[in-house]
Length: 97
Length: 309
Ligand SMILES: Cc1ncc(C[n+]2csc(CCOP(=O)(O)OP(=O)(O)O)c2C)c(N)n1
Ligand code: SF4
Ligand code: SF4
Ligand code: SF4
Ligand SMILES: [Mg+2]
Image (cartoon, rainbow over all chains, first blue to last red; front, side, top):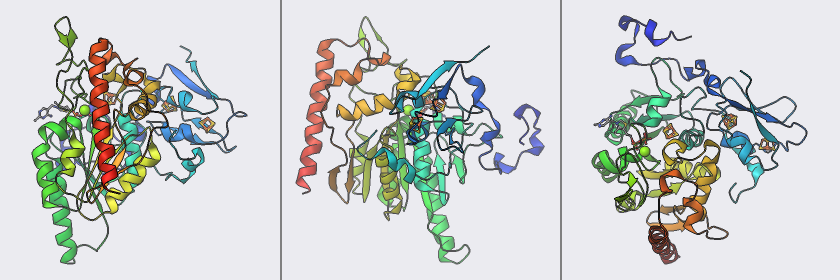
């Protein structure tokens, strides 16, 4: 787990500010930005993966049952998956306060 | 969806070498382009990236969304940096200091980095013929710093430094044709692509990486923030740009042109322009000018493709 930047002292930085842990942006949960979330109708989903291919945030995963759904830890709620789904089985629904 | 079967999304590499947790705006198709490019390239890749949206959103210290060696460059010099990486690593391989291995050396920059400030280093790298790929993510302005016009901003688009108003119709110069400038360097591979056509994009990036010598890929990357559209429409506008022939998808292999996608029905440019806030102010006369230019340019590309046959 990387420390937040404001807690890091300069002596702790690698030379050249190199980040040695790959892909650690996963620690940053962009899901908190969201005001709407995609909800998949599992029975209508034809498991084509189009939503997965078009998600700019790489946050659509294949569920064990075979359909696709958003990982809400990262989903920013852009609505691309709902718009591009060929059978229209994703609905954007408002987040509760 | 493009001409390929929807089911072929199963054939696309599942690994994510550009991870979630990056800070691009909602619906950023430039970030989607990076994701697709990294699927095409795989882990044996070194990336040098110019500053710009994709650099700042992916690497706020101490975090990184990259799973490959990646270096943040100045605005102008990613092509020079990757040239040095390639020459250095090849020399070390030759001397047996590191094992022989196929590595993809890739420089990336936005349209500002490519068509404006980094043009010199890019031209030098293409001319020297390093075994590298240069990828331009073209969102048609300097988005990172607040939507300033670049030489890649299209005619008529309103940006903060080419604002539309009483005395101005927005950008009054024509978009610089970067792919053609790359072709003029006589390099083995040049292509245009767009993440709305992911299979086409992935295929081209793979080809660019496999081809020995320098390759250039120009990717139209829809930016909802700068184009003033809804985030969910980012894929749609990429598709409209291609179906209206505003941005034709083609590749040039050793000087031979090939159109990789022909619209089923060529749409009028109004289909593409309407709904984009940056073009909202355009009059019918200005739209006609755009249409005429698109038709002329498309004919030129078609002619070059025919000559190759
Ligand atoms: C020499 C220099 N001038 C200006 C800047 C400020 N700057 C950083 S990114 C950027 C714009 C990037 O535009 P582009 O390359 O199109 O990428 P985008 O953000 O649109 O993806 C500017 C002007 C800089 N970093 N260095
Ligand atoms: S709403 Fe956007 S970020 Fe969320 S899963 Fe769909 S495409 Fe991905
Ligand atoms: S695009 Fe729609 S049908 Fe296809 S996998 Fe996603 S949710 Fe299912
Ligand atoms: S400004 Fe545009 S290109 Fe930059 S992160 Fe936002 S949507 Fe993407
Ligand atoms: Mg740009």
